[in-house]
Image (cartoon, rainbow, N blue to C red; front, side, top):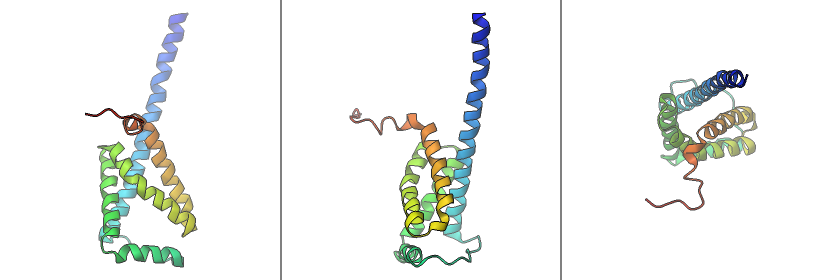
Amino acid sequence: MTSEVTMNLQIAKPATSRIARVATGSARVLLGLLFFVSGFNGLFHVLPEPSAQLPAGAAAFAGALMATGYMFPLIMGTQLIVGSLLLVNRFVPLALTLLAPFMVNSIAFHVFLEPTGRPMAFIVLALQLFLVWRYRRAYAVLLSSRAAQA
């Protein structure tokens, strides 16, 4: 009877890990597509511009980013790179780390300046936090209070 219970537990375990792998892969691809398309469009303007008018504060912020001459292309280029890394499943923890400052600003932008984008911003944040949790072992060294020197 013990071997029967053990056998049932072994059979149930791969189903859970398969679900976790599919969920992780799906979240990674969704996030990758979103940032790849957003970055590509920000650099090359292939999609039509939205017709909705931004609130004054949001328009001023976006205008300031564009007026610097480098910040908007830097953000879009980073999004393109991060999206590519997520899509090809390479350097995923690094891609998520590069994405973190953008996500903090994106949440703040939609909370304080452009509230209609809040739901999408929080969905993207949830996808990123899920992936960070799934890749949490990769961050163990970064989050240690006393890291060993090489």
